[in-house]
Image (tube, rainbow, N blue to C red; front, top):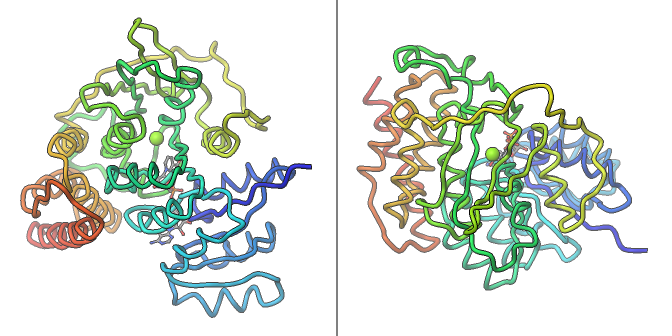
Amino acid sequence: MQEKKQIAILGSTGSIGTQALDVIQQHADLYEVYCLTANNRVELLAEQARRFHPAAVVIANEAHYEMLKDMLRDEPVKVYAGSDALCQIVQAGPVDMVLTAMVGFAGLPPTISAIQAGKKICLANKETLVVAGELICHLAKEYHCPILPVDSEHSAIFQSLVGEDDNEIEKILLTASGGPFRLKSEEEMQTVTKTDALRHPTWDMGAKITIDSATMMNKGFEVIEAKWLFGVSAEQIEVLVHPQSIVHSAVQFRDGSVKAQLGVPDMRMPIQYAFSFPNRLHLNSQRLDLFTKPLEFFKPDMNRFRCLALAFEALKQGGNMSCVMNAANEVVNRAFLDDRITFPQIATVIEQTMQRATFDAAPDYDVYLASDAEARRIAEELIIKNR
Ligand code: NAD
Ligand code: MG
């Protein structure tokens, strides 16, 4: 019998993390959880550990260590705390694949660490590629480490490329739901609240990415993610607003042929495909019914969704600019959730941070760390000044 694949989940208590555990549960004959990690949600992490019996758990926020240790005192599981422990656990010998389902820049160090240990990466944490796409691709090549996309659009592109081997991509058609403010006027967008922004029409996701979807920064990030994953230029990526979220994305080849992947919006499908590639496994989920609604496609409005335009700009400038943009976005995203800024201020602060931060055309890891810190500082200052 084939040995079960051992999976480390970075961010097991989140939206992607919990859906990944559902996939693993549906295929307990194939997959086993080696390690579960979270930042703050101690109780859920302990409950998951009791259910999935991992070899180890890590709580990134060290303040929760004692509590977690106490909750798991009767379980045969190693308990660790701190961000360094995340970097160490992904390198553990038995780990076959690492699902990066943490949020934000914090996902970068453990992803690099997993690549350096030659682990297969199932990448949900798109911020890693936004911040340091060039470095990550370089390392993945050096360590012969496959990166399987979990983001639904990139999984769709990846699936459309199966069997195409050396056939060049002419164009990527990257679909976007358009988010909750797709039909709002610029004037209406002045006064939208976080409650409005957190009401995503088609996907149920963590708070950070849901706000990024409302600003369409998420789609900007995905353009950058696609550039690095599939080796295309920004000019080869077209964003299409597709409110039904059924066509998850498509690839156009040089004979004009377009291949797309379709399905109901359910992240368990791309998560499972990243685990099982090149095989397809049964998934207990809803099936697509193409008779129920028409499929529509529109051009995105870069004037109303300035964040999308900023992401194309960051890509054009290259170097550390998308790292700067990501850091500013993390700060304003949090500030919007904390009612410290208005919706339109999100793009303004990001744009001004990109203008002020120190540009570096050829960043290395230390430059990314410094740029991230500097951009966060600038964005915070701008928020305080604008109040
Ligand atoms: P979430 O907020 O629901 O969950 C985040 C997880 O990461 C939690 O387990 C949390 O404990 C952990 N975490 C957060 N900050 C951390 C830190 N500093 N150190 C260690 N752990 C930390 O987020 P999500 O919606 O599951 O998204 C996770 C990632 O996947 C993001 O990068 C997001 O862009 C990407 N993604 C999500 C979806 C989706 O449908 N939710 C789709 C595509 C891509
Ligand atoms: Mg996506």
